[in-house]
Length: 213
Image (cartoon, rainbow, N blue to C red; front, side):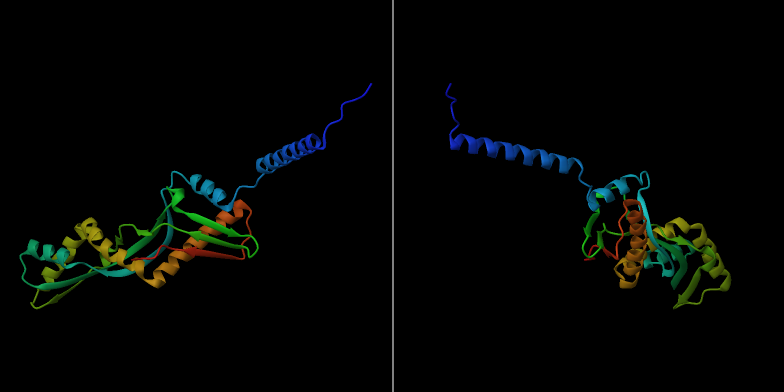
């Protein structure tokens, strides 16, 4: 009994079909066992930090000067005609939001073993003032020592309002290169804990803060 032979074209088509099927299966197997990227691992890491809304990157204690608006209001309360310069030591806390993982970008150079972290814009919390460090200096008028003491006592009671006023000054420091490097170092410390959990061993961690306009 004669058997019908397959034409070369049909045989070739069958071979190609089998090869394509094998490649498809191989791709599916590879994808199913694919290791998550550094970005994916970092996103999960941030999500696991919830409900923490922010990362404390740095802290500093600075002497800040109150605005003319605040000192003017203080003078109005005491009905004084003078110029005063009010300064106080305050704790400034620099933070970065972590409640929105999509605002963070991570790249991993496996060959150079360099982790690069692109952060959202850093921010300041309300400065915590040291009421015992209040200094008041007058200009253009003589103010009795007793009145200066009363001014200090009033400032201590207006602590929250003064903190709001000093926040503007604290935010100005975000453009200071030294402050930004301190914040970046805090982010590097945070990134190192991530690397331990993600089993990444970087030779260098680079932090890129947004450019201040």
